[in-house]
Image (cartoon, rainbow, N blue to C red; front, side, top):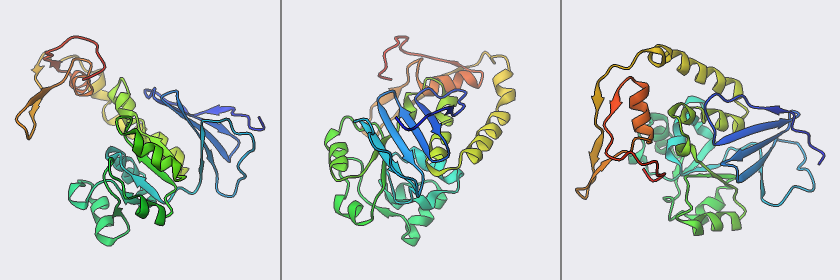
Length: 249
């Protein structure tokens, strides 16, 4: 009750998270309406009477276990890969050069994949945050991490209805690292770079998107999918094989 959140981060497209500010030391982060975090600045006191269900994150967050691989790009652009010390991917799986280099130097170590984390290693490293994908299909992992006292941030950018909303998630990670100004500048620069594309008329060209899996199956995307919307933004007409609005794409 002692905190007054009187400012809110400005977002143009993202709908899956919000960031609210109380003074200079506290931020309330809400993800997908049901996961709430109180981010406390380094040296600031953790308030009493925090509601149950609110996860406290204490800055600095510089011992992160990153399982949500797509988020590495945001940390890279924010020059903050050094905050990630534990990886859910092996060195050979990374395409981001600075992540590869960090693993090569030993600054970033493999701590097991999403379904089989190395809990002993994670604890010994003093992990202060695990950034996971939507691992509700592996609830035991989430529960065990939290049981061990490791806060878990569930990344849900893939649930954004607009591709540009997914891109705006850089602002969420910036909030964790006190790099909001850098993220705003990066996001605005990206928006400037696609301004002409967003304003152009549809090209009339049709585009089919599919891929073959290692088991030989062929996957296509629904008309409501992220890829289909990217095609539309670029001026194409996506060839859809299913016009239903089901969430499962």
